[in-house]
Amino acid sequence: MTVLYNTDDFIKIRRDLHLIPEPGFQEVKTQAYILNYLKGLSADFMEVKTWKTGVLVRFQGTAPEKTIGYRTDMDGLPMVEETGLAFASQHEGMMHACGHDLHMSIALGVLTYFSTNQPKDNLLFVFQPAEEGPGGAQPMLESEEFRGWMPDRMIGLHIAPEWPAGTIATKPGLLFANTSELFINLKGKSGHAAFPHQANDMVVAASHMVTQLHTIVSRNVSPLDSAVVTVGKISGGTKQNIIAENARLEGTIRTLSIESMNEVKARIEGITRGIEESFNCETSIDYGANYCQVFNDEQLTEDFIAFVNGLDYVEFQRCDKAMTGEDFGYFLESIPGFMFWLGVGSEYGLHHSKLNPSEEAIGKAIHLLIDYLKREAL
Ligand SMILES: CC(=O)N[C@@H](CCC[C@H](N)C(=O)O)C(=O)O
Image (cartoon, rainbow, N blue to C red; front, side, top):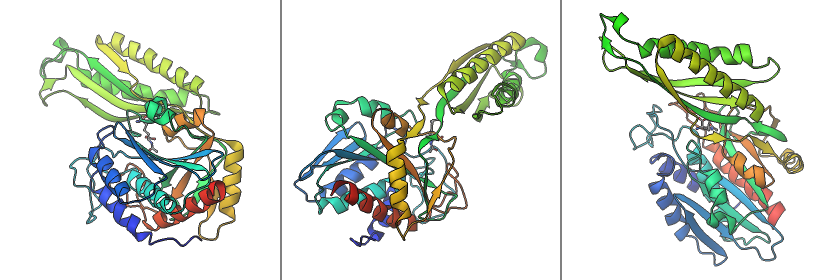
């Protein structure tokens, strides 16, 4: 194991970042924190650029043959934290419940090492905004700032609460699903609760719609394929004794192929037309942000797995694909690379208000990535 500096410094950084979760493309304090940290590093071979609320850090190699990119996401989620931690979110209604605080502290730990150990190849550290939505990877990838420093390989990690701290899991090929957000508005006619026959109740229409949406996976998707349609939020109406004129469903679709995504969307549109007819209402669908699948490069991933299997401070586990989404998939569409899971042993899972990742994983991931990048780029 590489002994470098006290990785506890990056636990403190993780806690600092945990205090200030911000929505996608509003990571202003987070960006300022990262830029301020970078100012403290003195490497004349390091260059820093910003892109929107993101940050790009490039280390010029001594004799570069390639550029290896490492990406972390930056945004938090709109939810009330219930961990009771001393360093719980200070931003009301926002929480780092998907581990991006750990992802960023790990990236800072790795780049700190290379700020005093100039690599042979170029390294690019990418702090990307808006992973949870509306998606920062695709526009960042297309930006002049990123294109000017285009890497030849791209690596990313995501925390995995279900595995013990420091477990590394991945697989070649398909790792994460195609995703699409789903927003459906329903508009009917309001009225007095006592005169339902004179109104069109959108609470009832929305309830039917949720039930029908749940038939798509069970009745329309092949049992040999996989898909998810989740409605995570439903809202409507104004008061308990007024019939609701409006209702809104907010959800997400996950599939293992673009073809299945198109089929699921076609069924949603069919169901929506049926609801319009049967409840005499108007509807509109917005698919919000769509992310392509995360597809790991076969060779680079197998090579990484062999590397991890040779280490004595982390455990490797070959995993199955998951229905999670990640806009990191856009990087992998044009740059070969891979994503892997980092076990953080939390009783509560991703997107849970009590998610409490083990910070032991931070030091292990920093060491792992330094050792891997040393092998690949020194
Ligand atoms: C790793 C993870 O949890 N990613 C998110 C990505 C969000 C995609 C998009 N906003 C959506 O909701 O479809 C996930 O929910 O899988």
